[in-house]
Each structure stands twice: as C-alpha cells, then as structure tokens.
Image (cartoon, rainbow, N blue to C red; front, side, top):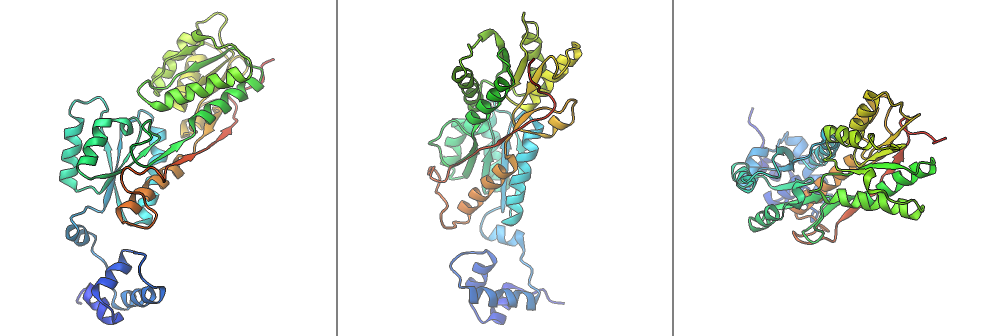
Length: 342
C-alpha cells in the first residue's frame, strides 16, 4: 500500500502544500476552518509525517539539549522531567549532555556537539549557564538557549528560582522553633544561587535580631560528601549548633548522616533543613524538612520558552531579550528532621 504524502493531503483538502505544512507545524496563521479541513484530510489519507525528513529539509535536528554539570542527581532528575514534558508536547527530542564546567576543552566539545547533531537549542543549567565564554560562542553561532537561574541577568531569557525567599523562609522557620545558634552550609562558590541563599539566611537572622556567627558557617559544594564534611566542622564547635541549615538537600542528607554517626539525635538534639525537595529527603530517616522548588515546572517552562522561540511563535523573545524572564517561588515542607527547641 502506497504511503500517503503531503501532496496527497493537500489534494484531499483542496489546499496548497504550504497550508498543509503550516497545519502540521501548528503555526498560528491558519484559520480554524482551514485547520480542521487539513486535519480531516490527514486522517482520511492516513498521512504520517516523517520527522527525519522534516529535519533534513530544514537543516535542523528537531532536538534541544540540556547542558549540565550539576552534582545533585535529584535536582537534575526533576528538571529533566519538566523539560522532557515540554519537548513531548511540542514534538521535539531531548539530548542530555553532561560536561565539565572546569574543562579547558569545554567550548570545543560543545562546538563539536553542535556540528555533529545540528541541535536546535540549549537549556543551560547551573553553573554552565554562567559560563560567559560559552554564551558568547552560542551567540556567535546563532544557537538559541535559555538558562536556569543565572547570575548574568542581561544575557537573554532565563527561568529562575526565588532563592532569597527560600533561604529566608527556612531560616525564619528555625528561628520560630526557638533556634538561635544555627549552623549554615554554604552552596558551591561558583554558583550565584549560593550567594543569594546566603544573603537570605543572613537577612532572616538580622530581621530577628540574632547575631551572625561566622564560625557557624561552613563551605559546601552542593554534594552529599561536602554536607558531611561541613557538618563535621560545625558539630565540633562548642557549644555546637542546635540546628543546621544546608543550602541544598544533598548536603542536608550528608549533615544528617554525620550527626547520626556521632550519636546525635535528630531532631531532639539537632534540627536539620535543606532546599529543593528532591527524592532523597523522604528516603532517609527522619525525613528532611526542606523548601520545595517547582523544578518540574521550571524545566517545563524553560523548554516551552526555548521551543517557542525556535518555532518563531508569537510573544517569544529573540536572543538577548530578557522580557520573558520568569522567577518561581516555592513552599516550606515541614517533616520530621526539625523540632521546637526546649
């Protein structure tokens, strides 16, 4: 049986090939009546579009890529889920490209990836989204991208998280539980989110007239191991903190392990909090109090904004325009790792 072509659909509907193409690509400048006629013809002829043929014809891959070097697998899993949802709805594929932020050959690797795949655009996750040399290269090659929570606000569209509010709300919650000696595990020093979270934590202490003690702050790197290492430093203090707030959940889980390995009861003797609400928070005991960021929604919005721009849909911003930037709030999720200080 002969496979139906776009010409067969056009003949069946009594329209031009170009009109059929517009309907298939879901373009806006087609009347509803015409769209319905073409869609009926597609069903009647049994036409199936050929994604490979479309890509070759347009010199495109019909794929976008998530470019990342993030140490938290739980964070990436949620972000990826949202991006994939957006890709599925818009009939696009998704490449996952894990690279090294510190690699001397990063730009060359990404250029080769672009040339070998014809990838149409990138979603750039932290800290890759702040690599200025990479952004300049993508701009030079006219490759579209959108960033997740970047520090350089004037480098095109981004979808971000309200990290200041998240950190402020978590610290304020611990203060309401009567904790005043609160240890803090900082995020990776190469990520802007780390400094925003730290500022929110400090602001909560200031607003509640609690003196900031520098010796109750320890450097972390958004990894489980760095959470353990930071907790070891903080729990050696005399007197030790009554609560520790880690600036992501991977580190909070590391803090919990270190505390329990020392025989410190959580939450009776030490309250622990994190940020993000990734799956690890409910896979440890006690479950960790955290601040839930809508990472799936953020990934979805990033994908949709990028794909809209690629498809030249109305209201999509050109590269370099930041008018469509979106900042998402989250919510405090109280679990069993925190308690009132008596």
